[in-house]
Length: 101
Image (cartoon, rainbow, N blue to C red; front, top):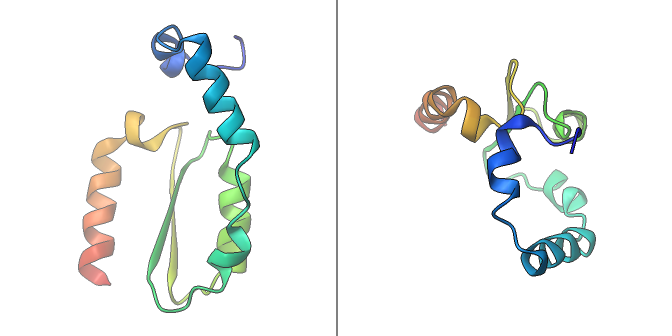
């Protein structure tokens, strides 16, 4: 459990073996949609990630492939999970994104 951020430890014990198995199966069977996202040119897109997230490199890479005039990247410093650790910053940035676009 050393790889699980402390933020998630309380929730880890709420998972049953059956739910955990279903979650892992869904994760392993997911399809890569990043190629489809790259070709979206009619929507404004806000990508959000915490700077300590294990997904930051993937999000940054995806942002690099997308149309910069339609895509914004919000990277919140010193957090893993933006929704749990910095909801105020996310809300403020989301409101600004919607207002501008």
